[in-house]
Each structure stands twice: as structure tokens, then as C-alpha cells.
Amino acid sequence: MAEHKLVGQNYTTPDLVAKVTGKAKYAEDFRADGMLFCKLLLSPMPHARVRNIDTRAALAMPGVKAILTADELPPPANSINDNGNVILANPRGYQALTMEPLFQGQPILAVAAVDEHLADAVVNVAARHPGRDSLDARVERLQHGGMHAPDFVGNLADHHGAS
Image 1: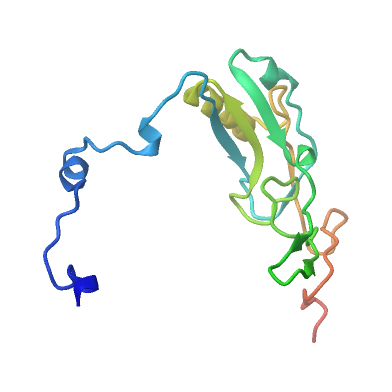
Image 2: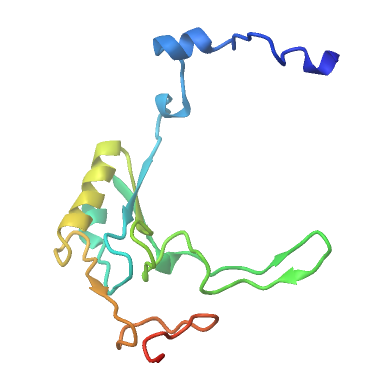
């Protein structure tokens, strides 16, 4: 019974007063010298293709340290499970950043800047002004069977021609 000494008992956590009064410190509250802030540009539409991302103007802005796109990430890698079996990577599996978002809100690019507001501003410019110089992220809608539709293979059913 000793291992369940708190079951059925009132218990006050040590940080209760700090949390209730707003004095508790969370990871977001800490800052370090040289710390960078990252913001993501999320896809505004559920099924799209990003045709071009021009990051030159944004990278020229003072305080913007890096912009990461899907082209700069390594491809998915195979993994080995506990039994030593190789699990093949799915090249169409979920990726951290993508040029072909499959759902609204999927990350397209990441901006690292010295200031949180600057990182937000660069991402907002990219989201609001597609086709402009800062971040040219023109997104094109896809239609089933269209010339820009992804070439999925697998268990996707075609119900358009079904009778």
C-alpha cells in the first residue's frame, strides 16, 4: 500500500503557487545570448505544389540567419528495428518540410532569425505576397488527374470513373 500513498488523498504540487500566480518559468520564458528564433511558413491550402521559393531578398535582411526549404533536407532514411530488420524508408512519407503539401498547415519553409518578430515578419511576407521578391512561393492548386497531380502509387482508389 506504501506505493499508493497519494491515491485518494489531497495533494498540492510544489509548483502550484508559482503556476497560479504566474511566477512559474517555462521554456518559452528563457532567453540566451545568440539565441535564434524559428518560424514556419505553413501551406495555406490543402493540396498544392510550391513552384518556386526565392530566398535571396529575405536572407539579405539584417537579422535573418537562415531559411530552410525541403530541397535542403536529406531524403528519408532506412531504419533498423530492435531485431536487426531493415525498415525501408517511405519516400512519400511525412517530411518536415515539403514542396508539395498534402494538407493545409503542412510546413513549407523555416526561417531562423535573431528576433522572434523578424522571423514572424519574414514568414508573413511569404504568406501574404506570393510572387514578390522576398519569398517567391507561388502555390498552384492540384486537381485529380491534372497535369500537376502527384504521382502517387499505392492503395489510392479512383472513384471518378466508377459506375
